[in-house]
Image (tube, rainbow, N blue to C red; front, side, top):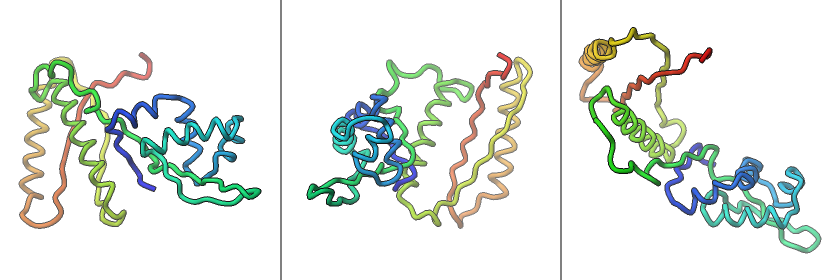
Length: 186
């Protein structure tokens, strides 16, 4: 099972936009039959089978085995991934994005889409080959100080790049995203 599947086809997205199918998909985190999924969801095996076929046609689940039950062949199905991300490219920007400077939301949206695409490309690599790093935190910026913070951040990153940027070794992409977070009390 993959860790991640990028849903980038309309038929896949349509299959996921039915709450009942999402529940069936969740039940298929482990290999199960339609009868087993139906029992867990309180539905008939036939009703579950309908949703299973839609999910299978969309490439979101696979038939991984079968067994004989009372002389009838029963399929065993499993989700193809643990997480499903809808590609922003299914709709794409409508009418283009606004300002593209580094202080704009449009710039950040493009950056996040690029990171998402890069992460999906990593999925095919063996787990031992997935050298990744992650850092997260919160800062508080007084009004009007975003530009000064960006200049400081840019300077700090240029220093890091100079110290760690060589011509040998694994190539990592560094993406820094700062966005306004709502306060818990709001």
